Image 1 (cartoon, protein in one colour):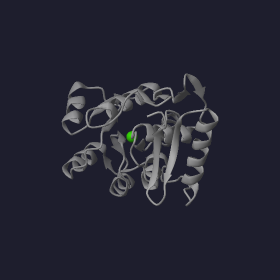
Image 2: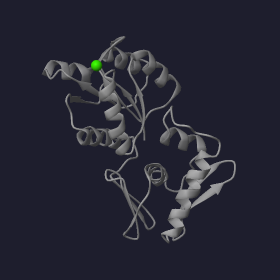
Image 3: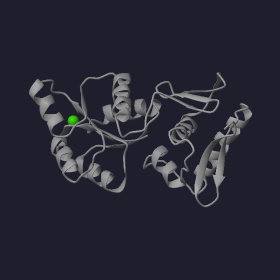
Image 4: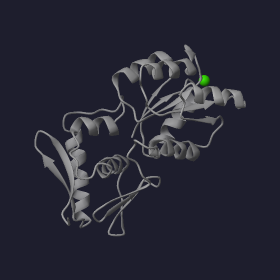
Length: 225
Ligand code: CA
């Protein structure tokens, strides 16, 4: 899941980015509204975490103008203010949720998952395709009940496929969902990642396989059906 974090405090930004990466998000982090505008213009994010006090303006006005332009990406507002009026104002301005600073990373990750679960977003906590099960919050996967240990990107890739069972996933979709702007993605990065995941599934004896549809993309197929 591709996430944009907008936070000007460098320490908090780096820490939150790391924690959200550990929770399985592909995180792009920016420190001001100019960079945030540029990011949302070029990339479709699954969810946005927005600080309100930013050096070049107010996060609230960014949110309003984003909504005015028809961008419906779920937004969680980070606020140091805990007044009821402020919260109501943020929600009225188009925020989907808010969290008062200081916050605990597991709570932020849980709130974000809840936002992504809302109607219209095909999300669930526990995904299951054939003999593979994936528990989203734990970033853990199993094949016929046996743990399948996967590095962060491979589990993100598996999650992406399991959310689109029986559907073709293109390289562009994989790149968007799994890699952030500052990640190096070369022509064969995704092929290598696919190859690794495919090997792990077959080594684990799964009857689910990752098929290549040449020139189109990839498909997770359950041989048992
Ligand atoms: Ca701030």
